[in-house]
Length: 257
Ligand code: SAM
Image (cartoon, protein in one colour):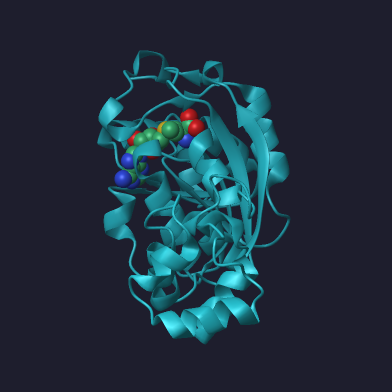
């Protein structure tokens, strides 16, 4: 089998990135450091080729046919230990850390599990930076700032651990086969690890009904007089909606309630 006669498997979210200008933009956006590179879903190896030129790469691919193909394409890099491929479902392999040294995740992620992978990487203490392609709608959720309609738990969780930037938007024509949606590459530069479960539980309650007021949502679980006191302390009006409160104020609220 060669890359020409591979039939993309929908169940693994296979949309291969063919536009070389986008591949170059991903490589240019990589933080400059000594960290190892981790690629989830190397696919036909188009991005991998660029990555192994920069640093050594630890790759995880679920599709056994593609694993065999990658092993023949990258024979030399595997022998020289520039590339190591683990064949299997990355979510099964991932314990508290994915690899046992500091790494940056650089990948065109399978969209059906992209959010899950990013949340795991945010919690992984060995993961220092996350540079990934996902569907545009998901990238916007992670990168939104307070006041924007899509600002929510994902934005707050990501922005609590570092800085988040959209690198580039990518149209369906950059892929083969073409996905139905637009995509985007975005970067999270971590300076901490994912916040605690109780804080995230509070966020879930805060955004249960995004169009209702934050006070109404939080009152379902938290003591009303404490909430009133907290809102006053933080100068938050009672009619404020969940997406209008910024990350810093959510942390203050958490401390008080
Ligand atoms: N990196 C390639 C590219 O840019 O052309 C392929 C990207 S494609 C969007 C997603 C890749 O992730 C596919 O190769 C797919 O087989 C792989 N994949 C899907 N689910 C996976 C999982 N659970 N664990 C590891 N790899 C997975």
